[in-house]
Length: 568
Picture 1 (spheres, rainbow, N blue to C red):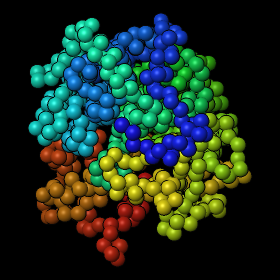
Picture 2: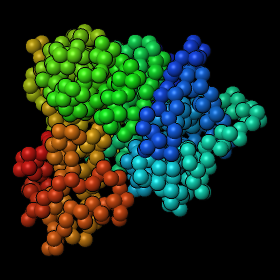
Picture 3: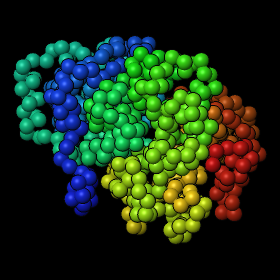
Picture 4: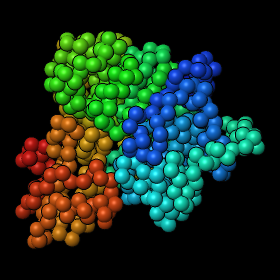
């Protein structure tokens, strides 16, 4: 399925930014070049969090696993352009399933492990997904049973494949692999010959939250993912064969770009991690001889506060760490470099394709690199970052649409280029609002021009009404909509409460109808009645006599943020 505008396609191909290469084609090259080299490693705690057992695979074993899963998908009737919802932990299995879908041209729609019936129902029905691939459990939640329970509400959902422990009413993926025949292998070969997946075909539909209450689908093709992998590899200065530790779930831009696509770009070793567990994370860094990984700012700062914890890490090998999703501490950036020789690379990105990396070559001072990014685009500066010539940027006053060129004046960051997506999945109205009249993507993030030569952008805040909790975007409007359905709540506004570990936590400000209501009762209502993901629970509750409103009746969240010291 091709959704990208053909004029855009021709422009980027003419510049050499897009080609005929595919992600599964990149896999094939590594398999041919080094079939017996180690390629893919499971989280060491995988059995504790799921029904799967950890494995380690060589490149040829990866290729065999991908072929087997592609043959199973073909055998059960899936074909090019069918859509499959995938909910698996970060694992070898998730990697193989994604690559199998890419090989066939089946469109993968990966869902975070935290999603529950409410979010999954929306994804399945928005995409008309024919199948789901999951596991019996992730943690304590019975994911396979959740999908089985959704079949009545999702008329297109026909097939549910379960990896690991089989569940009644589903198809056992392991058993199906074991029952493959030569005839099934022939059917796969025929399918690949008759309908080959091209670089322009959709690979994924990932999900993001913003000002809209419902998650929005972000479709991306091979070219769009490959260029992001090139950018991540360049920003992190990854070398061929290096070992990567990926703690970001491979369900959106962060995990797929820094994990899957970077791995295929350099042909190294991808070590998966799930869920984030500091003890496991540090053990993997040591035991797996990791060259590069990513971690939230709060985790990196906490590590520096406990030097004994870092004593077993070989910082001669691990000399770069990526971080982002919140402003970094210049003390943290400086101390890692000064005491351990580790470069902290500040990363800013979005599912829609915004991609910035502040590395030491482009932003040498620690105090700058903690909060600033290179001012990419036609602004007269040269950068080492590979995507620098492919990203056009400007700041715009969101009220007047006037371009901002004055230093230290906040404006919304607008972006153009081959990294930016073409539009949300089957949501033309939302897509229209996401781009301005000149075709620039509205990031919803406020930056200001700064630096001794006006060469940087400094992050200021957000226009979008979202809360970023542990790297997960949560729509304030979505939670407010559910809160207003509670029988005791008259009005509701949700803001982000600062948190050192997670970045933000959900703070609900409510006006009640007379009866007292507890945070425990509200969260029971949200998770049991509304069936939303646990990470969307309210973590701080303020009961107010009234919410602040402007003259036309709109809630003024700025006043609530000032009152409670919340995140901008």
